[in-house]
Image 1 (cartoon, rainbow, N blue to C red):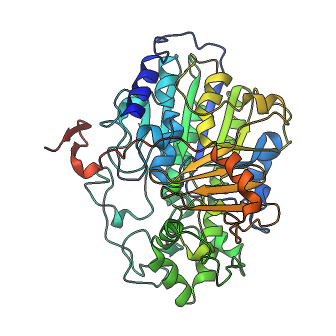
Image 2 (spheres, rainbow, N blue to C red):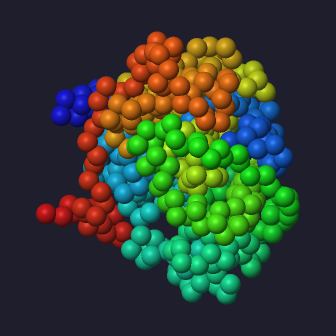
Length: 488
Ligand SMILES: [Ca+2]
């Protein structure tokens, strides 16, 4: 309750009275994202041999944050935190089932804050969570809805704008039947231009050709490399013999019960991939989807380069969370380990100093809202819980606080340049020295030599956690009017 009151007080103190503020002369923003892309990106060196030439080039001409983390290792809570500037412990949005709007109608999101300050605000694809009810149209001046690669799977109640078709011949393409929906990978028998994300690419290309009387905030949300991992053949051809991650037999033995539960989420999919002998196949599909996403990012960046906005547009590239490829016997996100929290984050364009010099400080996606407020000269916001990255853009060795990542109420990871400390809601702990153990195989939490390290890191853990908001099954939602009605 106390938490809730503090939150409402903070909102009341926020500067909301900036409608119509002059926006002339301010930079545009291209807010470009991918989904479930971990650090298997060339410039992050998470998988030697991965081909992401466009992201690597962007990192060279901008600033790569080498130690960037999501605020929550799952789509909706990660995106909600980024777009509200508030931690999951503050909003009570911890999972993919919780709407933002009917639970926290007073929150001013990042696009709305830009809108209030005179920007033209547009978006395409997956920016907020992708299910109906998570992306109110009043967030945007214009928005183009996401197109999917698997419309046959998309239920009308969740994706009412998607025209459903029967599954194509040969589906599921990974040959593993018995799994519903998104658990699939392979090559679709369609031209590259017909993939769902390509619709967003073309829409963004057309948008960037336009001229505007005011600066714009353009959000382009690509779906790749999210499951189902479908990509054109040529990207699969780039990885004829992918390497598998190393997974020690006893890796889970020193992990507390709650961590084991997180690792066991959708374990059946991991088991099936491994026991069917398709692990290498699945890893290849992930790599192919990363390279396909990179190629689409390249198209959008090229469109910006050849547009009238090339010189005056800040580029922000981010992924909402990472992805396990079998590490900790897990084929998913939703854990507090590096695999699920480490994400690519690149800033480029006006205001970005010392380009090409990587920043090593731990940062989170929560920091982006205050960063963009500062870079674009928007009305200040006192309630935001991230910390602006502008000092790091001006001074590559500036200090920044540790990254805090939250999964479900009361479970947190604290990441510094050297350590990862995890504390679950029952008080159980993990501690990894990433200098000597980059794979996080040896839990040092029980070693008395590290008591003071743990104590120092624990200072960053939020003191309390808001109770989870009601799930969407507590609401009737109408897509046409975008109204919610709380069920009695
Ligand atoms: Ca995601």
